[in-house]
Amino acid sequence: MHEQIRTNEVVCLEDIWVYYNGVTALEGVNLSINQNDFLGIIGPNGGGKTTLLKVILGLVKPSRGKVRVLGDTPVRSRKLIGYIPQLSQFDRDFPVSVWDVVLMGRLGHTGRFKRYSDKDKKVAIDTLEIVEMLDLKDRQVGRLSGGQRQRVYIARALVTESKLLLLDEPTASVDKPMQTGFYEFLQKLRKEQELAIIVVSHDIGVISTYVNKIACLNRRLFYHNSKEITAEMLEAAYQCPVDLIAHGVPHRVLKEH
Image (cartoon, rainbow, N blue to C red; front, side, top):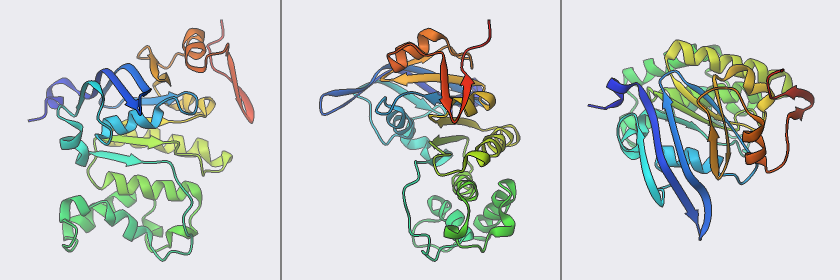
């Protein structure tokens, strides 16, 4: 039985160090995520944000430190983790439908060469309803908007019956006016599905409104188990004085004093 059932802890990282070819990618990272947490991680490019997600997934093994996910090893818990990596360019004319993409998320349950069961199809339908994309299940994915595609990828992650959702720069391909709606959708999803969500993003001005915790990462993790960001955290992460970050429209990061 997973220890997480008793402790409500979804992710526990203790003194995590990662090196790539002798270069430090993560340095002494400690992090605890509980059920229903919505954590936003910000930081400069090359600061280790994607590496941190891959450690949680078990795709990168730390040089030292301990990792527990859902009370077990990341590899054994991976079926219960939904992961949406940064979107890369793809062929919009590729003939794959929303339905096909979402069902692919059930391959871990069916096996690569087995047919999808009635249960697989029901889970896919229910999940498409959750992400409000059932009406478009026969639509070619390449014909969707950036925000709609992200909902499809979230559905593909959720059909694994995930307890943890990891998103790496999820709004990179989403138009600015649609980003607010996307984060509102994630917030609603977290509450209704009792998920823990970790979002990596550069857009602190948007995510700070919706997450309930924020961390700064630049090899070292600066985190106080809240959504308040101190000047010291920002300066340590970005290695320069910061009290305002602008993304089209200026957003004050620190509380008014």
